[in-house]
Length: 268
Length: 268
Image (cartoon, rainbow over all chains, first blue to last red; front, side, top):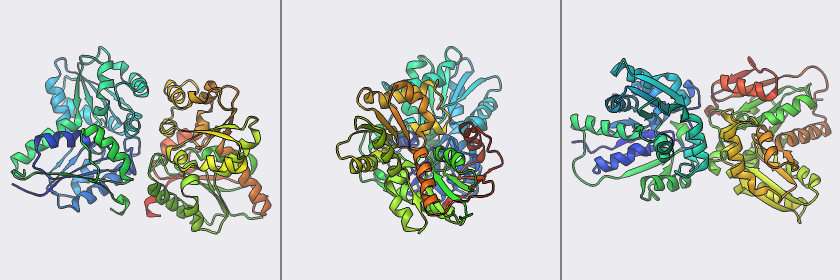
């Protein structure tokens, strides 16, 4: 048993897909969430910029005496996990392995699609993780650079025409070619309805959800869970709190007002 | 006559719409351009974040001993021009007044549309500048939060379906209601073809172009122009150079390879 909080970070709103599952699975835990809304998006930026941002995000979370770090960001998990692990001995859980593992397990045909940011797709992280688990798997990968701006600006409803058109442009090519699709950026599950309508019957593997489940198993194995009391989540962002509060409230289906503060992340 | 360079900055590619005109009008000048590609977009962020970024951009340009500053960014010109002017005695030219002036001059009906980022539209900067020049003008203003991500990701061609759909969503409401439309974000002229196809016959006023013209007049009046020699532009960005080089080359219609460097803007 360990009462220290768990640190979770993402470039913005996406990591809430992990938080939502953590709240359900381990309601006793205190969680410190950081969303880098002043510098989002990450996945269209260069490798050095992503590494620099990831390290400062980590330094900020480490200032809370956390017991583990969840990188609830596909881009950082793909590009900068080594940099992040270099600055701490704490358990660090990224999204790539948990998500690839589930995709390989649920796919019947071994034909797996991956959608993620440009940086993640270029890194080949999911492709490598899948082929390590199943060398016969066939992977089709596609970058969707506009999905994060769409989500961060609130264009993620199932009926949103802009989201639909962007999704058609990116994922029509998967039709009939896969039975499983990895949502390799934690923002993308917010577009789940739009994606399901284009690829009915395809199993969507949610990287935020899978990572939360893996983190809970790992904390449990290491006897790091907080088994008593009522936990809470405190949110920090690097831009103003209002937009985050509004969109996070919609996504989490409960208000987060008063639980969000701004931090000057460039100081870390 | 003054041989010092001119400093120009924007959140990313947009300010190139001013640079293109400066290159044509004053080819003798040396220009230092900064595009904050590591922190773009600005116009969907909060006021304090925009002010902080603008001040660091300015500090960087001031390190080059420039003779004047052109804020080739609608968002910074609308939100942070006072902060920027507070840290220098040099001439500082923003996009709002020059663009509003031309719009008022060319509009026959006084019915003027403004499209810009969320932060710019919320600030009311263009609306105020227009009504100061023509109190009878009727202004319709609309924020287009996805236009900057579209442009920065290369979705700006006349035939780009995503750009077309976003543009319909934002500007269909102007049809038949205005004779002049201010492109109040310097990124938007890259979408000129798409916008023209939706609003044929409407005069589009390009904020980057107008600001460049005004800057040249002002420098000329103050005898600050460089009247001899062949000028050049050096570009600095806060992310990797490759994407900027590629897109800037397309937009400027000449290569900029080898003329772009990366700077760690968070140090300024």
